[in-house]
Image (cartoon, rainbow, N blue to C red; front, side, top):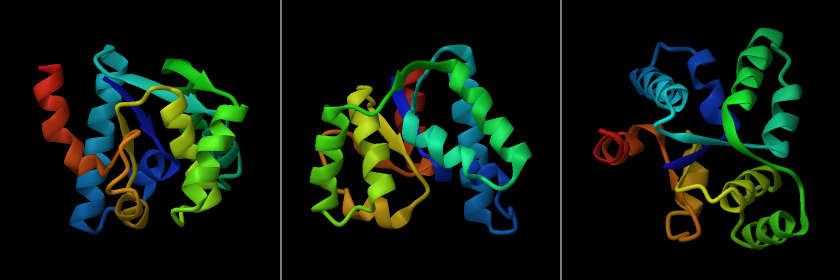
Length: 147
């Protein structure tokens, strides 16, 4: 199973863990990372993920996220196909950077696009090119797949 973690998902463990939902999403993201390390899940990396991560003002977070680049099975660079898909997502009201993330996931043949962004999940709830999903909702799906 191939997944794309967006910047929100990668940063979830660094968020304030005082809210139960944030804590559960962070734990789930760490679980996904363990599955990536074990080779049970495949990670997609992209140029837009790299760009957003490099803009992170917290250098320790930036470094921790950057390490995942080396575990990706595929790296998506900007190309005409990604830009075309992103443009079509803009017409659905998706923000430009989010559109580039989703387009990169599609280009990398992701089964799931994992994000903690509820607005993005709602906007793409009927999207069929890749399933846009919250980390909490993917657990049941991957447990049946990886066990």
